[in-house]
Image (tube, rainbow, N blue to C red):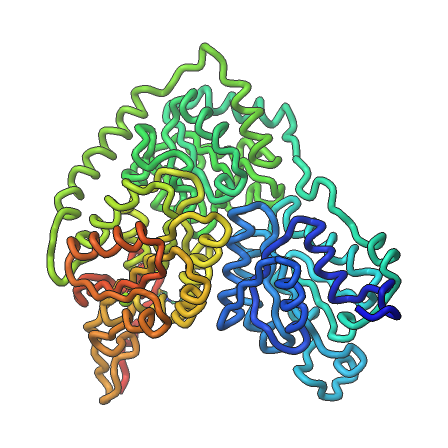
Length: 568
Ligand SMILES: Cc1ncc(C[n+]2csc(CCOP(=O)(O)OP(=O)(O)O)c2C)c(N)n1
Ligand SMILES: [Mg+2]
């Protein structure tokens, strides 16, 4: 630094100072004008900058980093196209209640607002507002501290979500006195304040549960996010109430826990008389709490534990709303379970018997060593691997690949299953895997359909570049749902199919990683075990019988049907 700038700081430095002051040490992004030097300067300070090949995946990485750490994951992009590429992930973070900040450089306000055609011109703030929890723009260097503080608080407080922070190019070069700059920074105090539930709300909920004959607790990913693992487990074990985990809540209590109703979902949703939702929404994934999946309307009572008051009565009336942060709510409820609590033994016994019967029925199918594999044989092998290495983080996307993996592979520890979330989005596979490896240092197994993989496949290079301990298993059935579809109207391939026998494993080899093709469960087991033990980035092309899947996996019923049929 020359002597005439010794007492100065600038926008670049202030942005990094503000992030570091708030313990944000990792940035996921893609470089370009006007943020290339920001990334270089972050690296020079020893921050981690994980450069992706496409912003969407950097964004998904940031979103899941937020979920895993309770600190906002940061995604950094260039203006207009880079910003738009990151926007899907920002919307995804908001929908899934993950704390994330998308920071995008932007073009000059004066030119953008007069629509005079600047380089990558776009009114990004206006566009972002519709898909995030909050959106801010900083115009002056002295406001960077407060802008970053607002973004952090908005992302993690209350119900977490995505926040957009717009930083125009000119801001980065703005200089100010270094001391004044340091004083302008804000360390956020108590970024996610506890929301203590009202005692009366706790009383109402506990009384309803105490008097229930067939109570059920449904755990959502909000419960997993809260990291109230011990209190949630203690509450379930002390009350003896069967629980049903939503997919990313698997492992809060092991799927093999005696009170797990995971293997008998349809029985418990229909039969339960009191259902307590903990950080789980009554959205489409739970059939909105009504209809044929559920028992008689009005006969079932709901308790809803959630930080957002507007979640109450969203789909059905809630008899006992408990509004607060999940950790505080579960601590308060646990304190109310006393020595004379009567566990619903007849009911939990009925649930256990049905679950065990279902598990026993499925068991032989999981042992098959068919070549090519079906989903059961392949996942039977992966299930054993996770049982032996329960600290492995499982990332999962696809249709059949998603549904079969969710139901077959048991999870034993909290936040060890990361998947497509509320939207059922394809494309999270590599971004999630990369962030999971970076944030936790644990081994990662990413099980993805061949279609799902295609959405983020180029990030295999990112995984190899950073030498991450990730094993990607592509379930290759030559297409979306099945590889057997034919186009009845011409010579083009059916639009759900891919090139048959594609050599996905060569993609890892191209970047110095390990790439292997397997056709049987025993080979799959050997190769994945080796990959996890070695920690080397690995891609396994797992050949699945192209006839094994079904249309849309388990949600085929959501496809609209033509009553008229095909017209030529
Ligand atoms: C972003 C996005 N685009 C499209 C879809 C629609 N979609 C749902 S599942 C799926 C792919 C399923 O095929 P695959 O991943 O190969 O799994 P399989 O059923 O074959 O095991 C697609 C494209 C989606 N969910 N998300
Ligand atoms: Mg497929």
